[in-house]
Length: 548
Image (tube, rainbow, N blue to C red; front, top):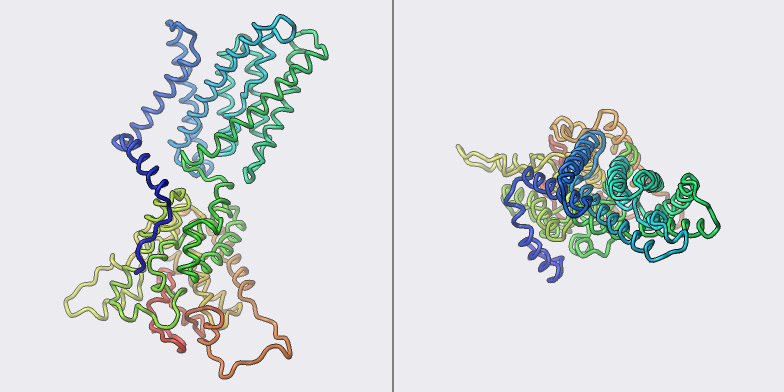
């Protein structure tokens, strides 16, 4: 066994230790209690920000209105969670939206105070009009942030609540509410999928343009004289509001990504960089596993795209699903050269080493701060499947009256909880089986893929993944097509291809970097759970392995 590796710096470990101490009191309370505390805190803080000082009995009515507003947000999140996958829990989503509204309210209150102060310092129109200066307030920052991180509909409800609070703060409430609502709508519908950092800049520029038109329309609607100077000042302030929206939203994205464990496409692309310590060590210490992970990622990505799942999440999850193998790479067939170390171990020891790559992978994921959604691929891509061949060996070696504990040969699970994890389970087994074929022709590939799908479905591993039968068929056909493309027949070039002397399946495997191969699809060791157990098969160097 290779000694446990470290993939984080001392500074990072120290920071994690400090955060652990600071956040430890929160773990003393149940999630429901934490939600109540957070809800109460946001209601009280928002009420104080909206209230006029000194506080009066009217503040109680305001407290009820704020309480109702946050309750509407909570119910909307519950409804939205049932319709779409938010990638985080509804409690975290509420914490994100609530904190965004609180910060937005604070920014708006400060903005109205500054606008009143600047207007009071000037005696020349239109600079002496506070409503002109309020066009600079970034009303759309919170809604744009939530849209990028969570969902467009949640971003819109965030904007609606912010607009209501803007109306309560502004001297001219109706005008401020209308201006803020149009600005928030432009932010929500002005951005497409957040896959590039410049997306927030483009959305902010859209907000700036819409703000300019809205500001001029409101001035004309208020029957104020619209001079060239007034139009330029209003347009400049409105443009400033769009630019401030960019600044606040762009600054809030990385903070909230790490604070709430949200996976944006940008974050996923960052996690796919091959120079990250854990991925570079995987490539160095377990090159076969690394190659397998990339191949599975390519297959799973195409399958996810075929059914409309998150293809990028699936590919990144594939890169990390076997990181636990860096602890004992030579005990996994894709990294073996020559003999099989499991031939010298008892079956229960082999099973423990193989299944431990899941538990060690989870510990490693926690150490490097891997987002939960990506870390979930590590245990779920094996589900609760059993290593049947090792179990059979243990039962055969057991003495009379000796019982073999099946739990020692079973992966800890859970079963795949979302579509992308289920796709990875299917692609992982299909790629491992297809790679071991001596002659991966279309008929053999289809035979093993169908066999794997039937076994996994019969074992109930996909019962919690929400995959439909139609989607399973699409995934199966996509994987078959992708594997055929990956292992297509090579073209012979006369005069350049020299036939090897006495070719064997094993020599072909050695040449192609595969540890073991099987002549027929029926020989591939696919157990009743759909797990490919190459490690359970005895094989020697320069000998073709066989099923037993």
